[in-house]
Length: 327
Image (cartoon, rainbow, N blue to C red; front, side, top):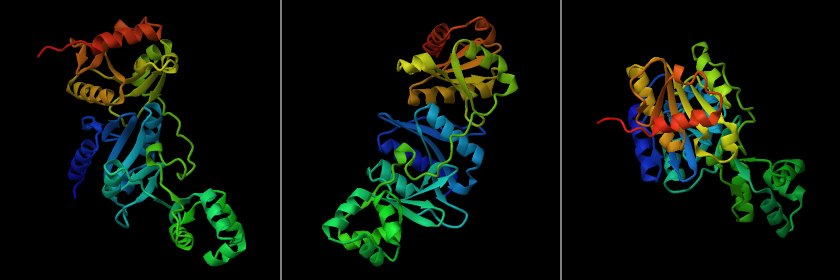
């Protein structure tokens, strides 16, 4: 299956599962292909035929954007260089959860999260340590007896009961011994934090020097500016005071360039993403006769060169975002 066909299938599947799905991010470079929301759940979705094509820079950006947009970054793919992705297994690339299309259908349509995750050395599951201890004690089995049954050390059994994860083979053996489900699903929608490699959150990249005037305006107005490298927007800007109040308009997708066809295309994509993530979007330009593109505010730089507070800037963005464009 081609990547384009796979992307179409994933888009349709998310729609069937009740997600509102953004337009595709048909610009390059791109760290994600689309954004989807169902209730309070927001996904940043990257679709790849070969998931090994996800490089470290893109993985880092996906994780950062997930934090800024309260979203779960996820990759849906078909294979690695060595094998097809297995169903019911969560993989990881650069700290981002990776699943197959079949696993995605199970998770998003059927509501069945995967039980297994891949890590160096094989496939593993999360054991319910307290339940395991209860089952062992009810069976009047000592740590040593259970260790002998499993072919592991007494200390390892103790660690299982303290919450250490186990190989699939060990988990199957335990469930056969006690005739009880002892595994917990992988919480993909929370980024699989409980099993993901303990990678620190990547730091923001430096802003493009060409964007320095925009960054200066935003920071002077009280916004925190998080530059991006591969998104359809140049930064995610946050009004920390507004965010603390739960203001939905406190997060703004921010673009900047001369206003041309490419800028207009990016502005339309930003508007679609903003509709899904419930954020505003703004595109700063030097000159333009437009005030809005599909809900993305278009602002000339000289209009805001003296703005020094977030409320004033947000009022301008809100007014431009709500402008009705001529048919």
